[in-house]
Length: 179
View 1 (cartoon, rainbow, N blue to C red):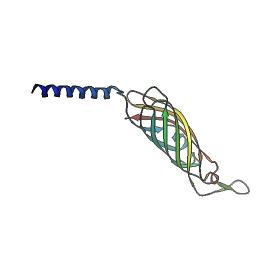
View 2 (view 1 turned 45 degrees about the vertical axis):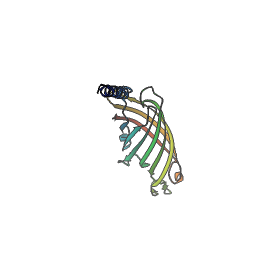
View 3 (view 1 turned 60 degrees about the horizontal axis):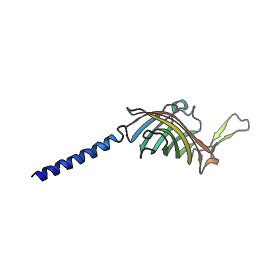
View 4 (view 1 turned 135 degrees about the vertical axis):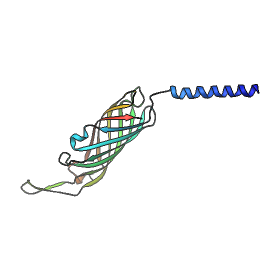
């Protein structure tokens, strides 16, 4: 009976130490993040994103950009952009980062102007895929608030000749929450 009781105490002690090590490793480590781009409404659009942290230095995410005012944003209709980020900061998934991204986008077609250059006809919307790279900086508070600034540049892969430009750009000044 004493041996069984002693064995249970030892197993309980090891289990407690193991559980304590898991929680003490990084009490502010949270792996999910949602964000809203604060400068997208200036161009008549809304951009929201989700990011999942794989470890201290890397994450996968996706963002969606949808235009609601085509008077302000004249070329892009929407894009959906998955990305991979690598962080160089000392804290968990924060600080300076670089990213590689893909993008599925809808862009207005080329404009064909009349001889007097006063009127034009617009071709159909062009759907394309782009690849690009970007960089940015992220600050995370202990309560989980996220502040992020980023910029990215990419190239359309298939239908760039059917639009007014063959490149895409991503700019963000975002606020979010890590949970």
